[in-house]
Length: 225
Image (cartoon, rainbow, N blue to C red; front, side, top):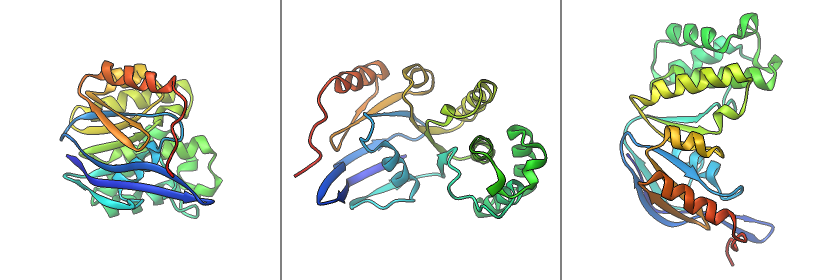
């Protein structure tokens, strides 16, 4: 369960206000896979960061039950001087999982070869993405946060990523940000649409997609006074 209680998030840049969420009260049910839709710049990634606990709200709070992943595929928390294997061990210790099992899993999935034991600063962006996705999927979370994870990597890696994620989803919930409506249809039980600081929840996925597509035809509303 993820519950937003009077949640407000506002950025002020150059004297202008950007409203991501305005006094939102909403609950994502336990075990549900929820597609998070919204136009570019609406604040979808910011909302994921607040759910993950890496960015604070302006006011209100987010309550949750069970374990929640960081945004799947995000490599920003890795230490550049540590190798891929050392980063896996460090993260495994933080989350209390068997570090040897996690390293074995990621080594097989990410297919980094000898680079797995070289410093992260030597990795290409694609290699970092494969490592990050492998670490995310190697830990059994109750809810996965997904921000366009399959937008990176080659076709083979995308297919393997999709298959692995769907396997994890059989025993977990998720909040999924994607520009692919076919992916939302395949993965999600419900849709929430972020628009102008509002979050509208739809138990009917097709209804939520239709509302999002209708919003996309409109002029961007003002962010605030």
